[in-house]
Length: 195
Image 1 (cartoon, one colour):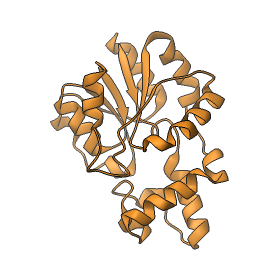
Image 2: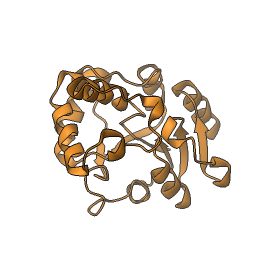
Image 3: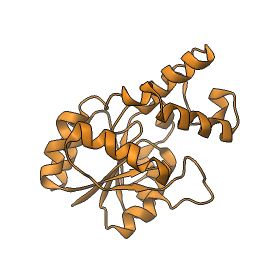
Image 4: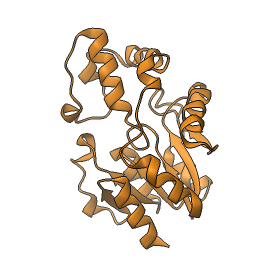
């Protein structure tokens, strides 16, 4: 079985680190629990272009390099990698590729393909994660985005939706292929049930 794994706020804790960076830079106090719409300009009081520039600045900062993997990911990932073909699928732009590879290779000790949909940066030029999964015959994606989860589920791809404040408004019971999960340990248990 082929598995797609989102990076930001699925494999690693992007928003936690970005909020520390943002709050430090602008003397703000935005909390993760208050984010109801993921990566929305409204929380950061700036335009989309300014937010993208802030992402680029964050990626060059120590905050990026000190960003932690999601709880349990580093322990569970090798167990999943042993039995399945893994692809990282990210909404980041292609120019972030080397930065992502470096962080992943340094921490995981292996090279996993990284596919970029680019939706965070330019929604007009993106390829959806559902299209990526279909083109690569990926059967399961681990994701935190409501939009990506619905698109994938509607294309017959199983989605493990990692519970986050911004996806709690989704009633996953309305979708046959979306399963809400709370941790990487639960993800491993549910993957093993699919075999």
